[in-house]
Length: 225
Ligand code: DC
Image (cartoon, rainbow, N blue to C red):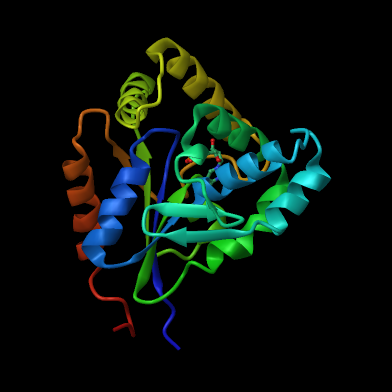
């Protein structure tokens, strides 16, 4: 059996990893896993059910029983499309808060690994290269200055018709980064074998081109198609 190749793209909030992962997956014809969306779905489902952010047992149960369906650029929770609802900043912050709990993370592990299918997978998140796919063939860690990331997030939200303030975004990004980096469970950090890419002064196209160049350098998958 041929095991599908994985390319991981990890990095902090609004580093551009979502957009870069999407374009790299398109260019390679690979599947895409936006792992942050799973944490956001748990955040939305648990908020709707009135679950306290410190109630680890119930949060874990929500994660384990997540009734979710993915389509190209769309996601459904219990049959309702929530693609836009999970992008709200409040849901991102709640996702970051519940992602500190190891049992919640464990409940999502297999679901994430199930995305690994031929011809290959591009997985974006915080711990794709360190925990979920440690054997990934190419691991990329995207960074960008907090100002560049706040500007990007601001533009993303305004483009989607969601109101935002740069100052609030900067504060939220710093708080979320600190929590994602300093948590005990699967903290945000580059895998030892990850390639670092600082995109502060790069366009999306330049970042995508660099990842594809690294991918080409690796050559064909040994024993692969
Ligand atoms: O990438 P994002 O902003 O959609 O992720 C939302 C939150 O989910 C993020 O702040 C931390 C958590 N997360 C995580 O802990 N591990 C992942 N692989 C992806 C996201």
